[in-house]
Length: 288
Image 1: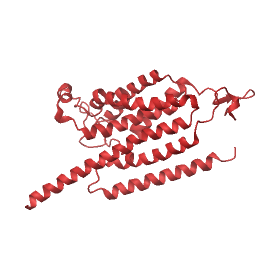
Image 2: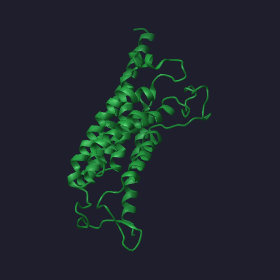
Image 3: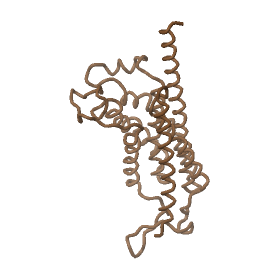
Image 4: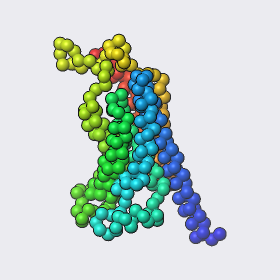
């Protein structure tokens, strides 16, 4: 083999390694769904566990279909300045990158699942699925389009300028979805939680003040307020911890030539989890 053939072979192996890394990261991100399910199931009463588990299973399925047919084309599809027809992009298989679709779908599914915990025990299953479809079909894809999809908030200098206009000269940078995924899901969760109200029997209003306190024991309500399993909550926490390595480090979308970056991301993710756990234990036990 001559030098050019060797270089081509090395480049091909590097591409394959990047694809393998992205797929492994995808598996970890998707595995976070089990962490969400265990954490939420452990924090709810026994007769709501089945509903929680079904919601987490179905929103993965619903999000996959919605992301394939509508969400992904909106987020990463054809340019909207008239240079390329939408239908030409959508039906041209050469434009479809299965690895990109899979990894972005895992993020979209996570954005929908985050809201599940905010409405646990007080939303009908079918109503939740309607929300899930709306989130993955329209709300989340539009945020992605404005940023990662090359919209006016994009940071890359060659990003699409809508109608020749850029909102900010510098754009915005979101490496692993702190704003695009989690802030979007958090805003949706707050809106839905305010709309549906608190869980029944979980909180009680003082008769002499406007202070709302957590119910002291299971006898304060017909259903009780305690979670069904502390073990499930701990298991869910560890599963989410594991999944975060794929969520954050996998956002490099490759590992060839980036091993130092990936290891640094994994280290900072670990320290963030450790600090958060210790802070939660400290302030959770702080004298009232």
